[in-house]
Length: 422
Image 1 (cartoon, rainbow, N blue to C red):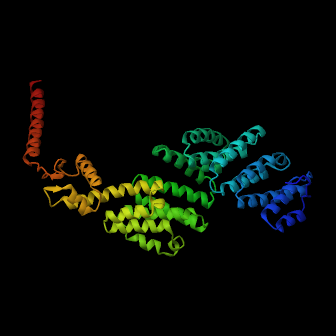
Image 2: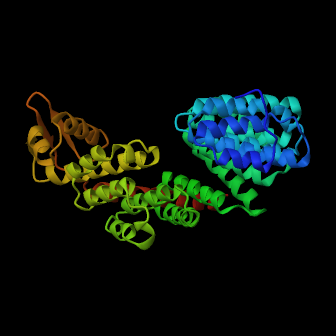
Image 3: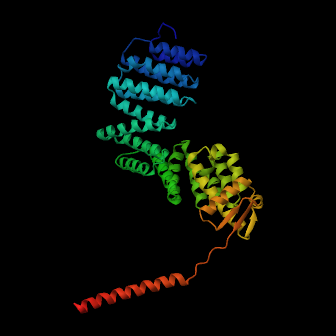
């Protein structure tokens, strides 16, 4: 950055656009910002220079420079309306967010801006930066700090009745409680978000985010049909906006189909007009799981989990439901395999199901404890002993019912005799 400034005019902006490389353009734009003029035209040109400079610094992945730019612009913010200040701050924070691996820098940047907005008494901007900070803390798994920040912010925004921001904060609070596995509070926060959203116009992206969270909570309660309808609504919203979240909504739709034993529908959804736009690793992963489920093959299931680890195991929502599906599938396969036997070697069962010996032995002992079948493990001989299901004799319940009826008759006779004696 040179000490001599350039006048904040359209010619200077054009000069930056015509620069040979990004470094030269960045240098020119910094010099434009150094112009001491505060005329309306100069301020307008500086706003344009800030937007262009943010884009260039983002393209060059210079996150620290964006942070220092925000600090450098503080005197400039006192010359322009508060609404424009809020817009510029959001643009710069968004630019930093688009640079990979800058979550820690974003948190530091937001904390600095919160301190500055408190000092300058800029409540409107502070509340939005705090909401952004809470979201970043949640992504960084700093849940307690995010929760304490949100709880104070919710009370303040409710008092001001800023419905649009309230929808964002309630939705964020719902996601935070869901991450902490507190489903009742997650549902309550989502209901609050829906109530606030019903009173105002909500942008499609935000409505899609509400539907997506609703689907996730319903899926958590095993209500996969309702969850599917919410994911479909979210998918339509995101698809219309070409939002990257559309592929996650579609992925969760396919998950719901698999969980309700309609894995055959997965191929049709993927090959539909809307599904073909998002063909990629995420949908391939769900197709592989659907094929494994249709064939009731644990081996194919494990191959899918191994080949698509990033899409299945690293997505906490998919991973949780597939773990439950895998357990169910394994139990069904084991019950089918051991049914003809009264005594069978565990190694033989492991060979039939094509899974490691230790894995099968552990699962069989768990099934016995859960009373999925009657049996015991003879670990000395390495065998599973299966008992016949004890047949309950029908005479015992019938006898108990007869004794109960006789008791009622005796009680009735006693009441009548007591009335006669009186």
